[in-house]
Length: 210
Image 1: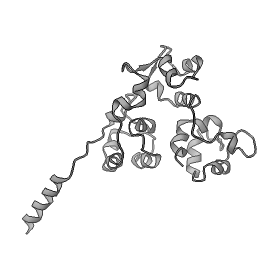
Image 2: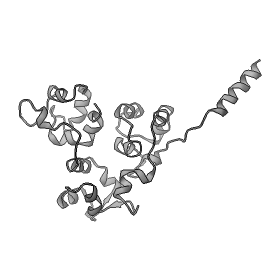
Image 3: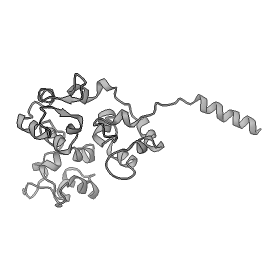
Image 4: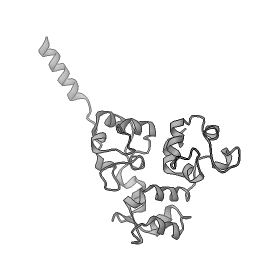
């Protein structure tokens, strides 16, 4: 009887489809051997911040190879379709695949980005952005300000017209926002949210789908 049960279990395992494992190399764009939420969303656009935080077990806002390889992470990835490399946004920006994006490349996607803003992002002044430069908070904030946003603008939530949002004002626009969300968006820790902080990729990660 025991042998029959063992044989049945083996047969069940063999019949179960094996999903392709997601590796850190599938997600890491900047080449630092970690994957930020933005990098994960670049490959798997349906992943949300709740899933990401559950996978990011040490809470450092990036995934290591160990975290990506964990069973919980692989189960979360399997719930969503991964984009092919040709479908990913950075492939559109880096058309020749050399790992760099010129001002003209960026301007095709973000036409209102000024040359001055581009030069501020281009930290080594080589007139091109590496993936590492593209994924800095400063770069993503600048690009967010040059893109159409699905967010409510700050003015529509700023009840006292001081050009900042309190927790109560944020909840007025996003009722599901939590105190933890507010603290994460408040990058400088001054207990209020500025327009720049509201437009940052960090804010999009936290409240964009709420």
